Amino acid sequence: MTYKADIAGGSLKVYESRIIAELLLKRLPPAEWRRAIEVDNVLQKTSIGTAKRQASLIKARLKQMTPQLWELVRDGNKPVATQAVFAAAIAHSSLLRDFLILDVRDRFLSGELVLTRSHWRSFVASCRERDPEMSDWSASTTDKLGDSVLRILTEVGMLSEGAKPTLQPVHYEPEVMSYLKSPKVEEVRKAMQVFL
Image 1 (cartoon, rainbow, N blue to C red):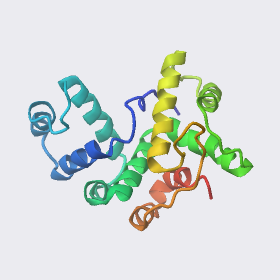
Image 2 (cartoon, rainbow, N blue to C red):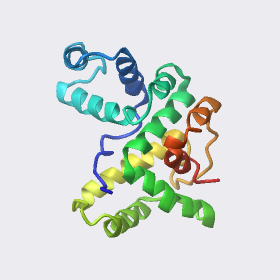
Image 3 (cartoon, helix red, strand yellow):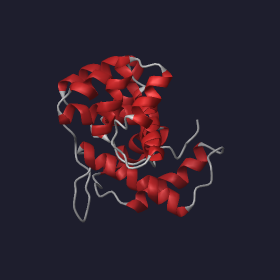
């Protein structure tokens, strides 16, 4: 198991994920993929570097799943696409998955539903015990990762917005839950349903 700082690319990026899902479904050869990202600038980013980084992160997330999920991302309404990208982000990041399963689930069980950056910092400190190979992150990197994770939970509706963000159950769309019935994604489903 290795925890990586690869979730710092930010939030779920549903708009960009729809575009990358479309490219993946087209099964473009590498040269055409590069052209779409770097020349045609399909993600509409101000720099090629940003476009490449975001495309790479989103592609890595979506490639954890099958074309059936890519179609949900591309064609689904906003809640469906958001939840499908959330599933892919959990499959891609053991840091996000374990935070949900090991920390957020406990908060739902105990009824202590306020979730702050300090909870994230405590979780990251505990990760070192599970993964001695984990890189030594600075406080600012840890906080940046935490901001990304809290934003993701807010986007999917598991964390309320406002001055005192509070955990809350999410109503998942039937299409997403149907996809998550596969035993191959059982860990992802568990992480998404930590409030049950």
